[in-house]
Length: 362
Image (cartoon, rainbow, N blue to C red; front, side, top):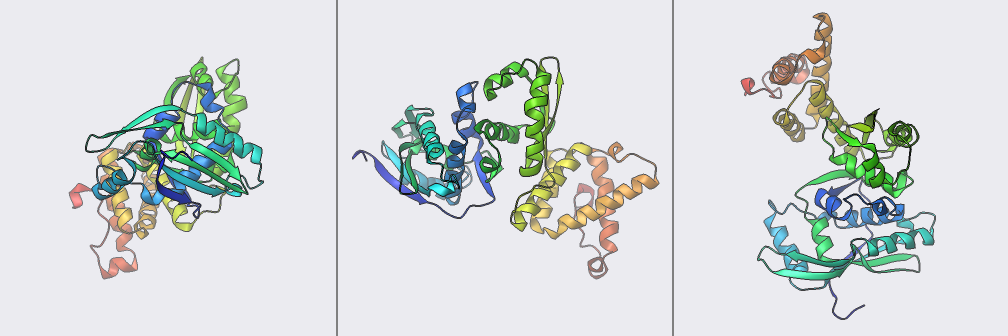
């Protein structure tokens, strides 16, 4: 190890969480741009990155809101040039079959990814410099994987002003690095989707089909089916000439063994996005619904029961549920919440203890 390298933090294998917080700026900086080489990154490279994110999860923070953690981070990592964190994993945590050739290729790819001089600035305006790729000094010996990560890249991974919740096991449940790359892009898409030229899409994700229709049939369709089974985010798509139209959605059921609270969080996210799209709710509505669910997760079951009552009412009125949108839907939904709540045992004890989602009830 170079004597000029300052090792400020040490990370070892820790028990895997269901979710890792994947920073949007890192995805766009390290894994963004039209470049076939990114899509050719080995799947083991993404497994290593997800292991890194899992290891540093306790040290991740929002720089605008968690000032003390920002201060501690900068004192450790952003005071001197060539400051690094060290990482050490068991090889089987990257590849259960101990395919050392695959692991080695993943390490080499990350060492060469974005290789060059990188500069970071701390909140005092001091600039620190580091030379290298996303990782440096990788080694693979005695069943262990180790490497360094510079202050620049740790800065990209630890500070999370914008991030997406990614399933930790994603790189272990798909077969290629470009599938993970597509998954991370999918996490960033707005609920109403996007339209892309299929030739640009192929260039970025390293496909080579003669038409958008062929790309959809032979690449996107099987990938969608896989994501439906093992991912928290999947997608619908359609083709129109040279264009691909993507519309993402949060999946309902996935064939993974996840912790109960992870499954509940997944169900809540899926349901909120369903209501948002079906009833044209805005961010204010969703934030209100999520905040009352966060106060008491039992509220989620109550909201679902009340929504079932809303659907029954629509059928009785011979009206489509989608007719009710925005504030109009929220007002009717609030009435159904009150009606259902007051029919429960708790409603008999505390009649006015129902969740408030409408400004007119607050």
